[in-house]
Image (tube, rainbow, N blue to C red; front, side, top):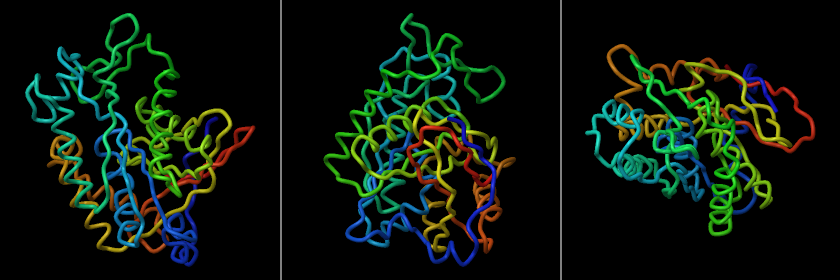
Length: 301
């Protein structure tokens, strides 16, 4: 099902009265965030995560693709290690897990790291690499032999998330919408939605940042799911500042996202202000509902 990614947010008064509406249900709030990679939750939803924790919610972030892959590495992985400031044979996932622990600790939330391998470390059944490096840039090319969805991997991750749901008993599950179409984001999202549906846990999807800044577009949810109306959640200045400081705990990723010619934080601020009714900072999510037919849901672009 394809959902549109354009539209308008809630009105100013409504968004203020619904500040963090997903966290204010009756009884204790337990939030389980499913992050594809080691930085996605902080970049996309970090301000709301730390705001929720400050408001008394128990917040746990599980990063799916955080496993360590033994060498040899693909050319794509070797190139990314170089961009991240690491040597070709460094245990990059270990380094990035340490970054993540520091970042999430600064947000005041708990961390869990999954065993699954990032796209750049995975192989196809024929032994070829799933991803390849594109010369002259930081982009990756997915092998044309790769299936649109690895359903076996989705099922395996779904079972892992269901075990976490049983252990942590979340009142809400949040994950990425997969804006930008990264295969790891789509896989993590699909697994999370299926796990939430099978365990009767409500789910929301966050706007993938900075993907939505650079290339907003449609997202395709698994059969039977659709996006509800978008909600922009304004946050306190302290939550915005804490998110931005937490992003700085990922120096490997800032090497790609921030620099002399591209100010990541300025772009995040500008993007939020385009959506915010009062021009302040906040983050966008969509509730997910089951549906038999696809419908278009407006999303800030």
